[in-house]
Length: 329
Ligand code: 3HC
Image (cartoon, rainbow, N blue to C red; front, side, top):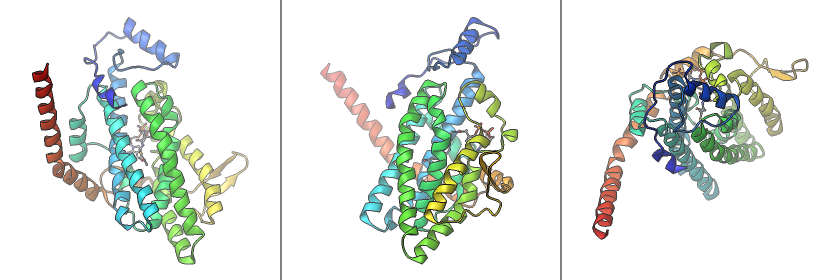
């Protein structure tokens, strides 16, 4: 997985429309074969992959922050160990994804600089605060649950390095979702005050999670191209619906109420109907004006600055090792 970063192509070769390279690329997409880093690909395909994979990597790394804040306050040693492992997994997901983006000829440093300069997007969901321990349950159950729903189809994405990274990520996300549900279950089987904490967390996270799947299909500017290229397999609205249909029975099992008075089973459609989604709130969070947007970026910038000595020490160590190896040879 980590060695993907070394697989950088020499840069896209421009070809005329209708060229044999373009025909070969289109034929491979039509046969549902993987495109690999050294294969010719249209510049627009490469660019949209860099956009999506880097946004995804940033989401994993920024996504460590709301839960990282709760490691020292976990209610037991077991919960602390599980939460630490989960947050660490998210950091690993960021690394696989930055490595996959690097196979497209971009540098990880440039991608991270863009995030820190506020020029790159990351998932809207991570702009919300984790206020209580129950939020660790709600994040695992709902945010990771939504993430898997969106990411399982990406295991079949047409770009090989992204698809392969997603296979391991999805396995880990599945554990994350279950640990979140387990926290919710423990709270819902606990005292009335604990159950109320779980309800309060669901009330605050539900709508941001529903928004997390992205704008409605009619407003999704990239879906047409990414679906034609086999990057995206299922549309934003269809994934959102699948998530809602799967989650409502889970909330019922917990004895919690989803904060949507319009939520109703529609027998004709075979799906739940929901109330209106506040897209203004979504676009505010996407545009850097969510409740914790500034704090998240400031924390990432600080972490990068405070970690500079580690990167410098690792480089100095690598230089010394290389010099020793040269001397020995
Ligand atoms: N948050 C922030 N921006 C979002 C967004 C969201 N939830 N949903 C959509 N957008 C942005 C898009 O990035 C795009 O902006 P851009 O043109 O500047 O790139 C714009 O809104 C229009 O949306 P589209 O529907 O046209 O964009 P896509 O076709 O790319 O679909 C997506 C959006 C569904 C998020 C898709 O990019 C995707 O599937 N990405 C990979 C998965 C991913 O990044 N998930 C993020 C969560 S990861 C996570 O939760 C970590 C886990 O550990 C919990």
